[in-house]
Length: 449
Image (cartoon, rainbow, N blue to C red; front, top):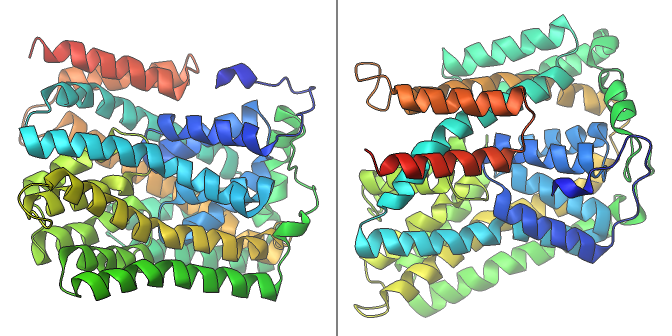
């Protein structure tokens, strides 16, 4: 990916649909690091190196995605793909963000449940987890250095950190509070919440972009009631047909039908990204349905953290293990049962994400120069910095004290995290290079443990 870097004085050439297709395909295989790491990768590639979109427009889209239920990094890819190449551009960008992870997780889930031995994967996990901690910290630094331009925004970031870290305030309430502060600030002290003043220097530094700060909204991205109605109706049909077929053919109580219904609710009712969704998935899949055990859920999360794609793709592991263990298609086609379940829940989990972007994108595009709408989003961006810092501490705690504070401090993991941070901050190494090096190191260390 780095080979396409443009100099600040070099104008970016128009990008065809198939050139974008090739990029989104590569991104699907290298989008490691959870939502923060994935957003950092996209910012580096699309804003800094290729200059497909300006930083201001990138952050405006990201802030909208942060408001939605579902995986914000996948929705951001869908948004940018849609903005550049219409509906099919968005569908391709979003789908290719997910499909590589689905195929990889189906394979790893089968190895896990059929053979119960993923020791070589565990070795790679050991090296990757400290690297992911450093990547999330870098993402907090990058977003914070761009977004926290004054004491008011620093205050919102600090307050959001205290709210989620010390008070366990739900993420949706933090987003709502930040949006209200931004709205009030935009009315009473607009200079503090004017995102254009905060990001103008970044655009000059990187150079002009294909979709620049003042590039007119393309015709397909302008709001029309007819188009909104069409998107909503098509989305309803795409949900109702498979759900109706499952209910009619297998019955409402069948495992496949219940998985489709449960993960539809997970996609619609949970906000705040994958880490907000996981407790809901855990309660339902482990506690209510008994599709898998608590230990299997933790192992699935580890697999999800260290494969490309959104972390919420752990739902594919949950579905595969649940359908395989329950032999829902009989004692012989166990792999087929697991694979079908994984594909079904991926469909029901991600369909709403596409609809939110294709339906809401034109409304968002109409607001990118309107302070009344951008000020709340500026407040949300500041709050997200505090949330990501909390996520860094969450990772660091589990990586450095795997048995809790009462257990032993993992010095080797700390050294790997430090090395990854130095590579990212001091030497500006590519995220994927850092992950690959740490995975290899973890694999080598596994032979001596």
